Image (cartoon, rainbow, N blue to C red; front, side):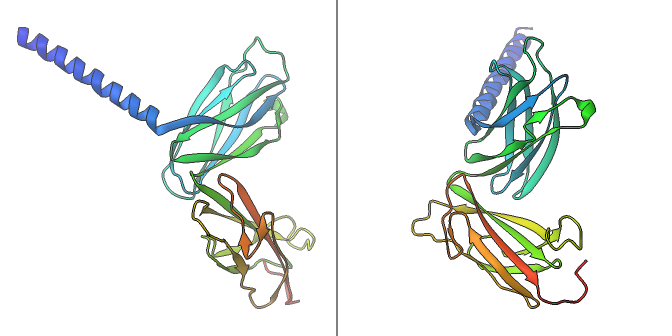
Length: 255
């Protein structure tokens, strides 16, 4: 009996030590919470669609929705297991009865320590009641600390096409997809590519130049932070380069 009691005590102590270790490890892995954006609610229902994309930093992230009194009213997690992985979840959250509406709720994310969140503005800002069909949509990108993101926006007029690039980034080509009416020459076809870039490499200059395919002409190529042959990538920021092409082949538009 004494042996059994001692065994039970030792087992309980061992379980306690393991739990403390696991909790301390989880706390050390998860960093501080970062503010992502606000979601406004007019009445009755709190609902948002959250899209999380891992550019170079897969793993788990913890999210919390807080009300205007800084109270955590909804906690949830999203796990992405690979690079360039993305997941969208729909989250419904309770609306405290002691608030007046419209009310604003903040969205925060805590990533693992080696990662950083790059928020995309939530839109629309206000999420009215569910019966009206409007929901708030938020996006967040995760990259490793010390990295920024190069976003390439490609628009083609007159048809779709595949456009290769000469570049020292991870974007080697983009195939444009349909946006709007197939024969609307004003809207064109548009697609985007994302690539992480190490901002801590001294003397590193990024460049991206389109290798114009036959049957197309390049209308414009520009970046919002530098030129296409000397792009300035900023840590935890998105730098955008845009390329526009027009199809010179006057035959049947690509479908």
